[in-house]
Image (cartoon, rainbow, N blue to C red; front, side, top):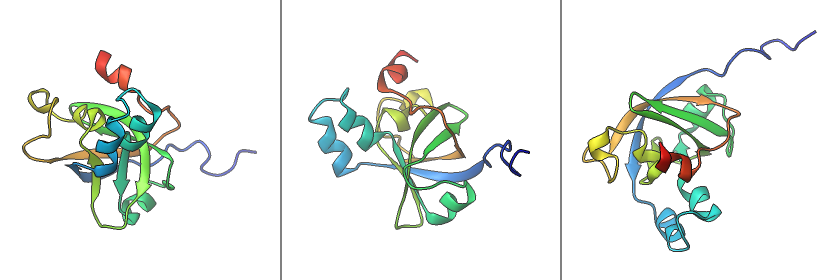
Length: 130
């Protein structure tokens, strides 16, 4: 007999996400943007504990972040602040309108739907091909 809830999908949670520059993400770009270190530092979203709990996420698990402009799968990190944020990176840029997709958006944030997933983290080449 299947476990209760085993086949239920993870709940979708809405959150306001801020895009910010991050010293660790910027440092990782110096070794090359197609390195594993760059992806580890940039393909992430830092979430408040309340959002992690609502989305049934644990630190390091994958989360699909979706907006009206795109979707990416990144690693979820539990933050110490009460704000959801992503480093300014190709992963964040994939979630904002096209006129801002190549730079830090002037509004520095967006509303997104978050859902735990087993999908692979979105790769940088797939973002560039997209």
